[in-house]
Length: 387
Image (cartoon, rainbow, N blue to C red):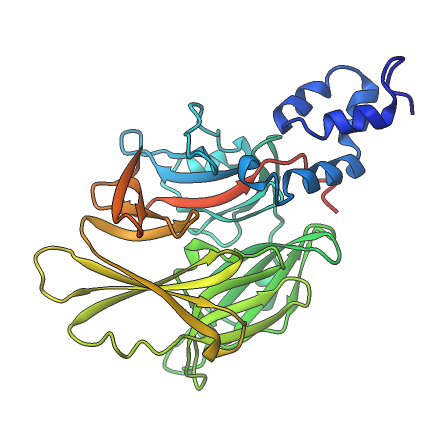
């Protein structure tokens, strides 16, 4: 296909590959041949590989900051440059196909982001799941799962966790849902069965897979997925499975793997403990923060551990200790060079640098406990043609 009389196709390809998504979206309107060329999945894939290459990653990556506005109480999403942390003046409009939920006091959160696609979920209903490409504005409401058929004999169905990731082997995007089922009379049955379903974007359908007896904590933070297709939650064993740690899920093999936490017995009474985890350099980082019981000031300390091998408890390595810190609620995400995003008790988003012990406000406000910070990369990936 000849694009025009002046540029060979190979030369035009090399030029277009270096352009941002917003420019390419505009160039689709030039003519039919340009629209077809830029929309072609081969071009989309090559463009994705270039922007995600190690030499280009920092300058192309963004951070999505989701929170609830303190004045309007509406959910808003802003973008920050990953490299400079410059805030985009224009907020990212939430998709209109989700507005019927978002305009209410919905508990919407970002499940995860892969290759420019973002998964949104309203935790007030396990059926409200949406796939969204913020750069192209394309959306897709995920069909209702098979749970109404699978749980007919149970009184309560609880969505314990949800995750989103990319299967690099089949080039498919998948959503993982983990359900607890409860008997009508809780005195008749102490054991609550667990069902796990996987949604395939390629097949546009849900199917049940082998599950694992566990309870996933802080599930509204979604599942952190690295580039190798391993997603993780903070979890603990149910019933006879007595463990607390990281539950990982291989997106391609569709199998679970549990890793108990490291020995933290040196942090004992009289301290309140708070546990969270992140991804740090593509590895699972576990954080435990604590403060003394009964202290008037909310001084907090923070230990950081890194998991070097999934399933191997002894592979946890303690990196460093932070603190004491005051005026903070919780850590949100890592940035780089061990710098951490924090939500403060004055409802501000801030950065803390352990090396300099400096806290920097980013001048982004939101209602308490409504913040999420997610790494994101703009792309041309089409949800309807993502396979």
